[in-house]
Structure formats: C-alpha cells, structure tokens
Image (cartoon, rainbow, N blue to C red; front, top):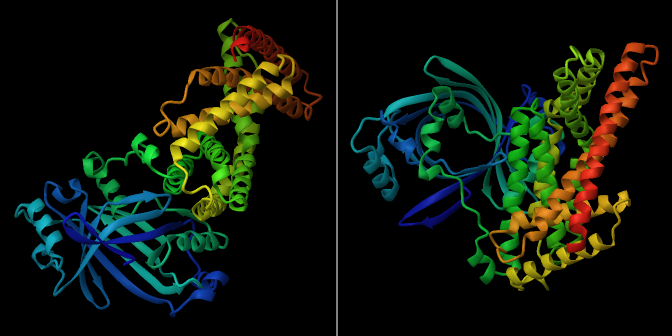
Amino acid sequence: MSETRESGDYRETQEIELKLLLLQSPDHSVFWRIPHLLQGLQSTPVADMLVSTYYDTPDHGLLQRGYTYRVRRESTGWMATVKGLGTVEGGLHRREEWNTPLPEGQPDLTLLEDEKIRSVLTKLTDNQPLVPLMTTRFQRTQAIWQHSSGTRVELALDEGFIEAETEKMPINELELELKEGSSLVLLELGEHISRHMAVVPGDKSKFHRGLEMLGLTSASLSKKTCAPKKSLLIKEQANSSTLAQIIPKVLEEGYADIINGFQNLYHEPEMPEHLHQLRVSLRRFRSLISFLRPALNQAQAEVLQTSLQRWSNQWSPLREVDVMAVHFGEFVNEFESAGTSKAAPLLQALMDQQMALARQPLYDSLRKGEMTTRLLACWRQMKELSVDDDMGNRLFADFGEKRLRRWVKRFETKGRCTGLKDIQQLHRLRIQGKKIRYVMEILSPALPDIPRKTVKTMKKLQNLLGELHDVHCEMKHMHHWVSNHPADVELMRQAGRYEGWQHQREITLNHKLERFWKKTSASI
C-alpha cells in the first residue's frame, strides 16, 4: 500500500490508484510495449485469475457505514480485504484498506489482523451473518513499473465480469496503484498510456458498479459517511493561512469541477448542457489561475493556461451550434403559435443535419479517448503548479482582498470609458467582468467581505452582450449552410424568414442594452 498513518484511534492504510476504463479490448502485445511504460517495467507481466466475493449483513450494515468486506481467491491463497468507500476524482481513487490472509474462503471478521478495525466492524455487524452481495471474476495481468524519481506503481490489466444476482457486467479496465512515491506520477503515466490506447477515467469501482446492478447505491450515498466533502475555503482558514497553504486546496477544488464536467459529458454526450458546463468549468479555472498568477510559478502557470484554453476553444464552434439550436426552436415556436402551420420545415431539416455533423467530432473524440489525454495532461500540470517562494508566506486573505478590489476598480474604470457603440470594447469588458464574477463565486467562502454590487451589473451586461454575440454567430452559420443550396427557392424563402426574425431579435437586444447602459454606466 502507498501510505500508512494514524486516523482517530486506529491505524489505517490508504490505497491510491488511477482507474482507466478501456474502450476496446486490449492487445497485450501492444499495451506492454508502450514506450514510456516499457522503459520503467521492473518485472515481466504475470497473469492470474482472481475471484472475489463481497459480503455484507442482510440489512447492509457495512455499506451504510462506508465499508466493504471482500474475500478474494488469489494464486497464493485466500485474502480478506476491508475498504472504506473513500473519494473518487476523475478516476483517481483514495480509500482506506486493511488486508488479512484467510485459511479458507469463508468470511470471518474475527480473523482481521488489525484490532481496531476488527472491533469497529464487529460492532457494526452486531453478530449478524455475512451474506454474499456480488462476485467478480477476472483475469489480472500485472507488473511493477518504476519512475526515474523512484515512484513505484503496480499496473493491473483486468478482463472479466461482475456477477450480481442473475446479471453480468463486463470488466475491461486498467488500474495503476501507487506503491511508493508521488500520485503525480500516476497522472503522468496515465497520460502516456492514453496517447496509445482509448481510455477514460473510471469514476466507479467494480464494487460500486455491482451496487448499481443491485440498485443499492442510494443506500450508501445517503449516509453521512459518504456525504460530499465541505469546501476547504472557510473564512477562518483564509484569515490565518498563507498562500502556500491555501492555493493547492483552491486549485484541487477548482479542478474537481472540470473532472465532474468531463464525467457528465462522457456518460451523456448527447446532452448539450454537459459540454457547456465543462467549458464553463474550464473558463472558471482559467480565471482562477489568472487571479492567482502573481503568487504562482509563471512558467508553469503559462503552460497550464495554454492547455486549458486550447481544450476549451476546441469545442467553441459546437457550443455555438448548440445555442443556435435553442434559438432556432424559439423561432419555430413563435411562428407556429402565430398560426403558421410549419415555419421552416426545410430549414429545420438543414439545421438537424448540421447539428448531427457538428456533434460527431465530439462523439469521436470521446470514443477514441482523446479528451482523456487532455484531462490528465491538464490535471498533471495543475498538480505541478507551485507557489512562488517570495509570495508563499503572505496571508491568503490579504492577497485575495487587495487583488480582487483592484480587478473590480479596473472594471469600473473601463466601464466609465466605454461607449455603447464600441462593440469590441464592450466585448472585452464582458470578458473582464466574467472573470471577476467567476473568481468571486469560487472564493466567496474565503473572502466574504468583498462588495458584490458590481456582480449584478457584470452578469446583466454579460448576458446582453452574449446574446448579441449569439445573433451574429448564428446568422454567419446559417448564411454558410444555405449558400450551399442556391437553387432551392423554398429553402431560401424560409432562410429569409429566419434572418428577419434574427434581425428583430438583434434590434430588441440593442434597445435593452441601451436602456441598461444609460441606467447603470453612470454608477459603474
């Protein structure tokens, strides 16, 4: 195991591993010869058939308190393992683990070697019998890999099935378990592997997937032991802690939003809102890096910012088309509610066709695992980000409040100097205000005394300017699509109707912006 420490009144070992789901069956002759992986192999890969049965009381007493009890048959004999449910972030699993050899394959809590965990589980089960929940059967091919820094990782390629009651679910995954050293190396190794194999971070353990098959996940997640962790950015911490102490925690929480956004998109790629939320998470994190920039290693921050920006910009055109589809639906509904039977059936067919074409690269990227490489690369770069030595001892609250006030003051100054007709300057003001709003939202628990009156102004301005930007983008897209069908007179007629609707929308938005600007510009 990777780490041993004191927790409460008993000793526990923490398992840290990166789980990657394989999107196609692995070719072992190719996998074990991936260059970066091959260079560090310390042993020849060995295959073993593992059969594990998970046990609990009839009323799921262990599960409800955040524990699992497993009996596994290995080549060397039987092993009982107790695990805490722990935490998962984008495939990086952290959980407590205790192992005990068994003389035979029957569950027996009295044989647990750790006295404290034996006492805890005995009390939880209250002399109830342990009954089987599920069984996993898979071939594990494993080897030890070592980084030049000395970090050691156990690689385990698992292929088989989860069996729960009468159902079976395939297992096809790679586990990289940290044996000694830095978890940063897990991300680096995972990144290299993802460049040669189609993988995605596995956010669910075999056990959790089995629970889903049994319909038991809600039972565990509803308990306090599995409740989401509270924000680390409480006011007391910020007031008494230095930049070096707080910034790593801020970055971890900020990147967790990106990881969650990626997982949502992977599981439901057909939902446009998931792509939007992932891009918002990327922009929020970029804003956070910009805000913290004076306190960070500049070269590292620049590398991370560039990676995040490229990832976000890659999907900007698709996001434009997703928003366009929403507004196109409003156009159709408005005309049909006015009595027109079909506002633009040919245009609707063209819109549907272009939407499918625009989303296909996203599906291909997820299927090939390309986005996984970006996720792991940015994650690694985030963990490498260090606080500047000269700034690290400054109090976080002092730095944050002064810098945020300077940002707000610059926004207000630029707002007073920007004219309503200066579209480019308004766009820059919108971007600047959005960065401030994101930082305020992220750091509000740590910096509660910052005035927030300006945030409402920023948000209103951003929404109006954003909608005007949408109009221009949507008109550009439609002109491009329709120009490929110049001989279709009826399509052209419907496109003209759509263009007129967009012009009316633009006029309405401009009037709203003008009224808003007259009302608020003097107070900015």
